Length: 271
Length: 95
Image (cartoon, rainbow over all chains, first blue to last red; front, side):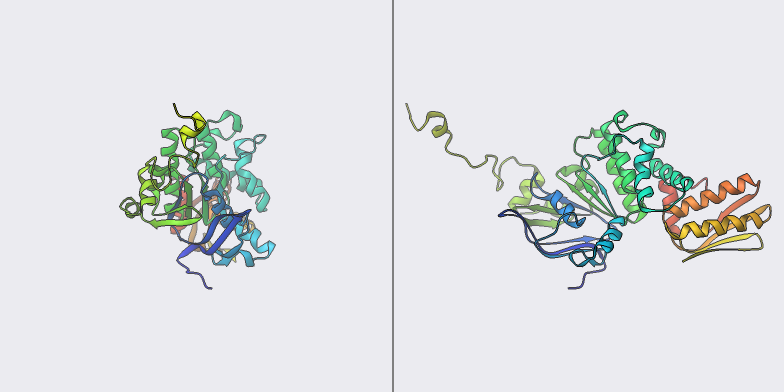
């Protein structure tokens, strides 16, 4: 089946299981090119799994995953390697190399994937660090950085090869309000100025809704709904409503299924 | 495919500048710059597509010009390179 050129990524009828449990069951998702798309849902709903499927780190049980015009399951190893160079990933942990300086962390993908001479690698590292506001931290080691700074260095590394698609895995987790604000601004700036397609996997509603052009809400191995942030806020779907309004109880219950409280506490013996 | 050419002290870059093509173009552009006069225009109007290596190439040529005490004026920077320069806050250097 052909893919729509307006979309950078398309999942068609994708299913993925861990053991007997479906993480995704016949899911369709279209990520528009050049936009910021949020993938949202409660913790454990498979958002990171979705990123791994798009990054071809995991293989779907069935369905098609089109990335930049190529269906991942049909690609040879070398084609996959080339495609991955066009994708950047900002991992939840930052995943900086702890024994390498900030400079060497950002230079790493350039050294591995290109034959550029040292002076051009230095230029690009400086340009990327300047873009995230951390050129002055170039000689520091990761353990000398705050959590927010680590995330920004990781972002500089993720854009070192000028990816066309940038995947953000929970970029706002554990960040203070200022660091969050900086990240929100950077994601939007890089997307708009560099024409990158951004996929932001997150359960941080306010931040994601503030930058996303479009949002998919996933849960129960399905796409529960999708639309612009405003459309989802106004949704009548009780599951979407619960997630978007952050209600503790609703279709997704507050309590994990259990025996009756009295039975557990009193062993079935009532006074 | 990317190329560099020199005519009347106008050094022209053309084609697609990427991580592969930039190395050969750089060598050629540096050679041509050394042949050029005191005041050189770097014409970027024929760059079809580029990424950060394009910005680096411009910086490499700027540094080479400074070393030879030449004046290198960058003209007609394509939109994508302008945007990248803006994000990395080097627009004022690349003039």
